[in-house]
Length: 531
Ligand SMILES: Cc1ncc(C[n+]2csc(CCOP(=O)(O)OP(=O)(O)O)c2C)c(N)n1
Ligand SMILES: [Mg+2]
Image (tube, rainbow, N blue to C red; front, side, top):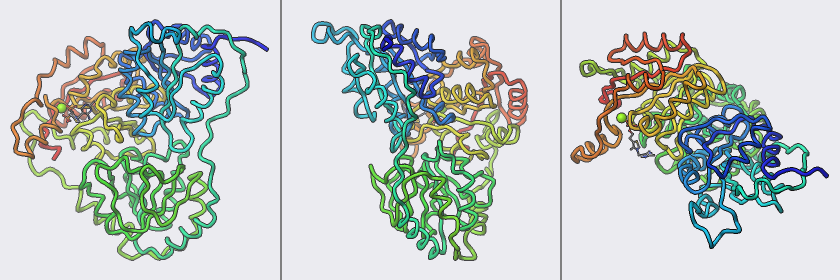
């Protein structure tokens, strides 16, 4: 039997699972693993902050259908990755985090940088374990399989530098791709679902974060059209049905009064596809019959359902296509067009002088970018507005942290998306969110990405300032001074424009898209337009 180093075993198993890139920021304790990745031909993207590595691994996974992998050092690097892991946990992302760890022989004698990483990551991961020479094979394979089995989520492995060059048996067989949930025998439930659908006069479909990597988009569209069912999406499934489809009825998940609740509340039957209540900002309390269709069990928390279909989404939706609907005349396309007219008011006032409304920014981007443009958003007032109003025309082209809603996600996600797809990509971020992760701008230039970073300059944590105003509190601790973004852009060698009106926005977006160069657009936003 051939022998190999533990670090190489790890690199081999990653490569055999289809991993071709790792995002991270190493410490001295990672250099053996880093070198094993290099020798195995796995690319390494050096981030400027560890949580960015996990946001990138997450986005990479959602785009490729593979798992995403991040690497950090022990104590401080792992601690810095915590927000990223928490995002992967609540946003259901198949990410593997590999950290270093101190030499196990020194436990109890040496404490420098030593944290109990298994106890730290256990509450926010599906699996966390140290890699040891004795059980490396099983541990690594279990971790890889766990990322995608059932509801996807993050896993964590730690490898001490002192063990990375341990020689062990090299079991070189290909690692089979992580299994999805074994499909249940859905025969009875399919019949039951068909009966519910045949009796329904006002069915509605709600999609959620669990549509990738199966991409049941053609079936979703066929099912909606055959049932005349309006389709409501969530931030993480925007574009599942294109926003210009006559049955697209808006999005749920950013406020307690999202306009799409009107359509949902009027329905008599809900078909939930890949849906996860972690995306909603209020408890689920819909009384209608619910047909649960997902790749994982309805649990944690379970929502009331009349019927559950668990397994391959394409097969399940195909099996429902021959239902003969019995839908009210005023429902479907008619209901959706009435809803659209009622819920897309244009601003009736002008923005403040030399300021732009967010609706103008989104309209300008939509008008001057191709249908397949990728959009990411950070978290704040701009996220709520962008989720509600961005017209996503293609599936899996909109990326947002919604389960955790963590600031700092948007730029990293855009970098990973543009890197992988080379498609025009737009990151919409608040000024506070960008300040948290500004260093990652360097990566956009290093990787020469077709990326436009749109920073909404309002010199405030606007969402929090708005909460103060709504509660009649003083504005306190929520306003700040911004840097000179033109100089920031020059320092990072990004193209730059400052935008104070719609025409400037049109020109800047057109120029940036044509150049395919990383660009920073500073939009002088009038936050009154968010409300
Ligand atoms: C890491 C993190 N810290 C704090 C928050 C709470 N929070 C949500 S929105 C927000 C304000 C964001 O400000 P900015 O990025 O400027 O966006 P704006 O609301 O101004 O559009 C804050 C502090 C959060 N979601 N994530
Ligand atoms: Mg702001």
